[in-house]
Image 1: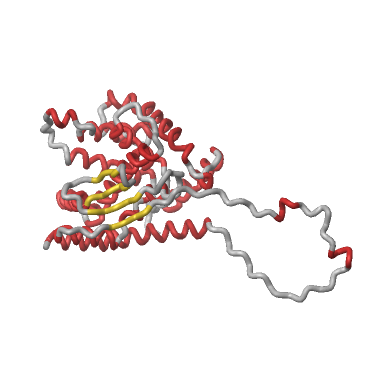
Image 2: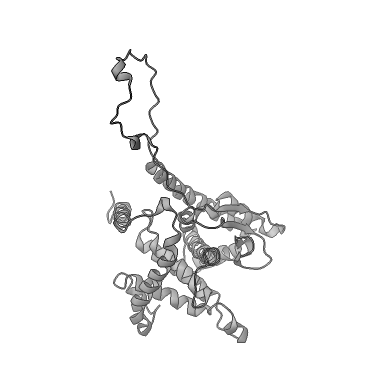
Length: 344
């Protein structure tokens, strides 16, 4: 009963936040859409002189040709599968009512941005275990209700332990869902685009998820918000690492939780050492590792962008100047949307 109440309250908060985010996204699309052409006005055509009726020899043919529209990318599909277990119905209802899959900002930005051989299908389903995974044979990225349920419980426990609110629980849930689904999307991109990997794929897609969260700037979030989301996602690795490691743990394709935590700290700090110096001064990242993080973070970001860039759909390709102008415009909006340091 308590769990249902927690999920109900959280769902209400999520609906409010996702509605605001969705409306913001809709506004941007409306602003970017071309204005509708004016309806033609019927009129009686006056009589023309014989010479005027002849086609002008100098009329440019190119002006009559329609401008060919650039091809869009491959769009994703989304589905919420009803669970068989009654215990998971409340989680299913929450996920489907707030349409959580379509309210993951980075996934939303990737949707239609790349040219893929087939769509990526995002699915929530009952799995019988706490997990999220990429099903290579079907092209499905699956978020298990058991994983979603665990994140809800973890967020509630953290908020309660730190005197937080439902909003803090919501932040933890969404930050982890964003990172988790980008991680699994990374597996899908490596598979579908046959992207080369010279190391462990699990580490590589952790790096991709971090790179995308740091690179996809939004007017709705400050850089501080983005860093906080990644910090919340990295906390998940510590919460799920009890330190009791056996041979199977070290033989697993994943790095242990503590290693993934520190790798993520290094990526954030290396992205902008001056801005994120507190990661080091607070002890979240040892100084010895921090010395190499700027070069490491830039190299990882550069390498991933080189792999992804050739697959950007023609409609979304930009020159470096256009890309920088767009980033500058978004950053200006971030400044305008930032809360004022005084009451007004």
